[in-house]
Length: 265
Length: 109
Length: 154
Image (cartoon, rainbow over all chains, first blue to last red):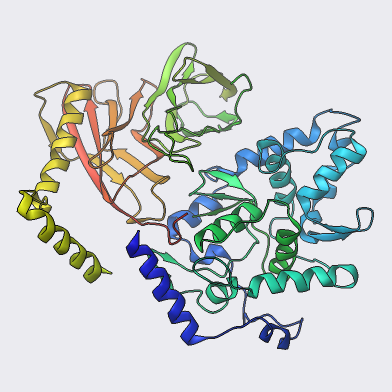
């Protein structure tokens, strides 16, 4: 344990020497600029075997959830199935537009929030618990319909303050290791951290099958793992903080195609 | 568990007599090894699928015994010689004896 | 990283040696691994069986990103005819807490002795496959995988 803390402190101090990023300096950046020259998907940082696992539509375990979601989409529940309002073909492109500002709820929602909004308001059913089989199946099925498509989120109008909030979160140091997302994923991507190569932290593969989880999971769950990694207090799944961060991450990933269900380590 | 976990099969619908075909199966299951600890340090009990069998006309084509060293959401691929048409039956039995199965029709010409 | 580990091990040794504790050498660890495999083969196929190296190919990634899920491809060189075929294959680990990972039974319609699956590896190690032929002979082969640790300890 002492060894790991030493490494963490060494890493933190090394990063501090390289780039002192105090909150406030972030405002100097234009909202249209991302520190990344070119976005690189998490796929780029995988071993050949893990890439092969993602690209094989049968071997990729994420498709277990997609298959369950395809079935759930047709299930007659409550006031009607998802399919009773939405043709499956109409789901193509839907995931590329989330998270988005929802006028009726007057707040930012992501795809899972939209699914639950449909369930409660239109299907007269209780909301699905986050990170359970039910919500992950539907969310992975719908997102998979947009596989290969680039993101197209709106960051203007009512979404703008959410983007700003997400960007602030990304640049804010946190946790015992006192690291901001920016320090690892903008400034140190490509470098080795123990046996792993640090990625850019792109969201385009989610919901993803993570080998560490032995299961498919959401972006918010991955964010919680990142925060635990720097020994910070995690936020709630579906929280405003993570929704804002999700918007920033998706905007930052512009140019990348959605890969869900991706396989990640 | 009463609900059948999601099962995916990759079986050709038709084959020529004598042709070698690849069959792939995957079932959604945690395959909890019994060696993991929870966030409070508590031991998570073992919960695995123990047996798998693929058969046709009651004859075993391929069978497997799983131990905790098999990964979650177990994937299997094996090969069979297509001899005659029939229903392929795939069965999984877990450590408590619960059985799940799925079938696929194979037409051999 | 190596220096820190080596230094820590030396300190451990220096502190503990006076109490008569001896740290296992690399040779002793290899010995233990070989013994684990031999014991597993005896468990699956019965004691005092001769095992020949050959005919069995085990493909695992040279580097596994995560020990929870490692793809394994086992292939046994056999015509798979009625008179010359593979009856059973056992996948055995030399360093997992449980040595026997899986056993496969090939029926008469199994055309190739070629099986793919995904297994768990607790540490960098050899993964063996042992095939039993219809004439009762046992053949074996292995692959080696380095299992890496995740960067962030969560």
